[in-house]
Image (tube, rainbow, N blue to C red; front, side, top):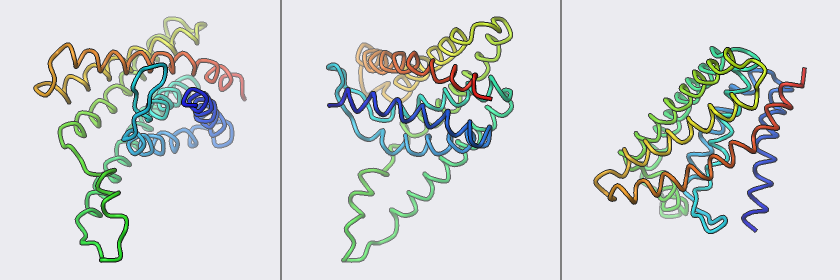
Amino acid sequence: MNIILGIISIILTFGTVVLLEKIYKKEGLLIWVSIATILANIIVCKTINIFGITSSLGNIMFASNFLATDILTEKYGSDYAKKSINCALVATIIFIVTTQISLLFIPDETDIAQESMKTLFSLNLRTSLASLTLFYLSNKFDIYLYEKLKNKYPNKLWLRNNTATIISNCLENYLFALLAFIGIFNIPTIISIATTGSIIEIVIAILDTPYIYISKLLK
């Protein structure tokens, strides 16, 4: 069941990215990156099992940001792609601050949401800072690398898309695992966690390739 839902999620998520760009041009992608980042930070709390590998549910949504920034860099220039990441960073900070303040309010005796909100929105400061920092840096690096590869290999869209996304994703996974879990788990365990996440991200990155070609063909 998870495999079928995963395939459907990839089609719907990546398809939505292309559709928003088709309808609203670069503004659609600017909006998407902020929305996807906030949604990913919520659904990442849920873990699932696919092919015997435990993964967080936010992988596809996070990966869609790389697709969106690659399309922005390809069709509108790297400045717009960088702007989308800056907007997403601000939106995420606003989301975090707002949810943390909401948890401080004393709930009424009739309230039924407080405990569920605590489960979803309570922060581990260390992992949250690591996640936010590496989201920003990895996406900026993806834009930088994509632009360099575009200039060097202008006729190889698949190469720059996959290379930039895969390298950026893997760097993010390994650095996040190191920053978030050093001193909690031993190094082999940290590497195992990062490798598992990277394998899933590589597969998702390859699957987004047809969508950037579709976006490129759409005028």
